[in-house]
Length: 170
Image (cartoon, rainbow, N blue to C red):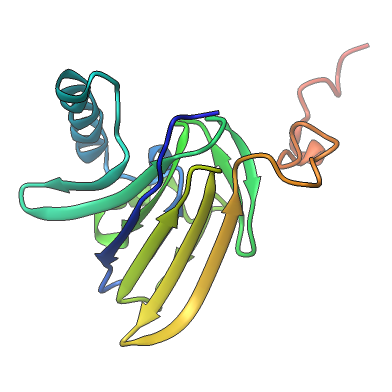
């Protein structure tokens, strides 16, 4: 399980936000800056760490924390979250790259938000609270650690009907 103590941070999202793996949505130049930020923190703290509130050039870019077991697929109320970067993040839409097609079932996109609070804990639970002008308009809870009912199938996000790689084989 990942070594995370959790975060409780808020970010302004005047045009809405994306919640999911940052590799699927964050603009590429900002993604590389985030990787560099983790490398710099490793030098200071003795471990690679890219969790917390990522700020670049004075702008709050995203709230991010590691999942309990890194990559995988995790279910929530609003979406299934495929994870390839080992973390989940809240990213204001202004910092998302539309060319990455993040709106196509890659996470939760909410355009009715002004502020988002991300709360995580050491069990791998992510809680996303959405505020639209001081009115709670949405909530998402994603468990990335052990749950009482473990999934029977390892890859429950994958839709087998999309896999046509072996149809023509004899």
